[in-house]
Image (cartoon, rainbow, N blue to C red):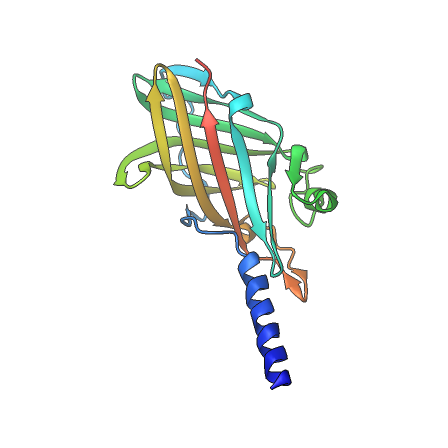
Length: 206
């Protein structure tokens, strides 16, 4: 009986660990094998992103736990034609990376992950915004996500609102990190998930 209780406890602890090691529920972005066409000049009013009210963050996970992080430094623009968003451009300072465990920061900046000395920036550029009619989703956004010098087209759902000349845009989606050659597996007994969750929470200045 005692062995059975110990075995049951061990199983519950393992399940809890696995549960803690998930990046959470978010739709998976459609990832193209290469870059997609992005218009460089869509016309309209170019609005600066208000970085004080915006966030670019991510969630990663290994078997034993998940990690929440993001980037302190980023900038960009949103182009508005009337009440329609026609372009988004975001540039992230990869070296400004942070996470909930300060001991991981240097490793995440290393060639095992973002390799920030060789690739100091990551970018997202989009000019395709297709209206959608799903709960919490107004548009499907298609653009190019570049990390470690590798660019793939991605399509993901977003909620985009325009009010009084200010744009707010929120997107929360998963990608496979290995598509951008981030392939470090983690420790044999604490493997890292291939899934990474990316969250854009953007507000522009007037």
